[in-house]
Length: 189
Image (cartoon, rainbow, N blue to C red; front, side):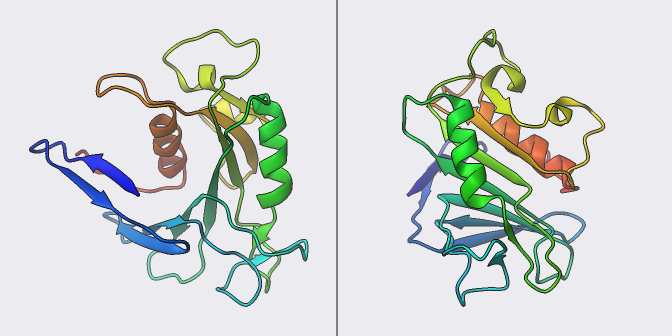
């Protein structure tokens, strides 16, 4: 169940998902963002396959970015919750091993180029702060560059926890960064 607060009037609404359900959003340029809860990748379901011929994969959340009018995503952002005291680096490696080879079986193009573990702990040895880097571990330091190309893969871990209405939210900051880099035109609301 996903619940959120509407900023305009403070009302709360809830969206309940069952496994492999999705909701689509479109940006001003007609690009589609599909939010999928516990999607099933591989087997005979859908156009995306497990490219390493592994078994079916079911991450907690996938965000698929489609070109305007397209039926194959250009990018899949995988978010997999890990409720563990293991380090971010260990969890990052675990989700990368499992989800970093989701792609187009016709071309071999890897689509799951952003694979992230959602962890309760922060990165080892990093100072606290209200910037995304202080809450993440990544396997490609180029991710922090303003010129980073979203076509290149990054496996990472981000600290997630309940946050107050005015508190810094690392997960929100990560998603805004990823979607903006993928060319999604964000609403000002």
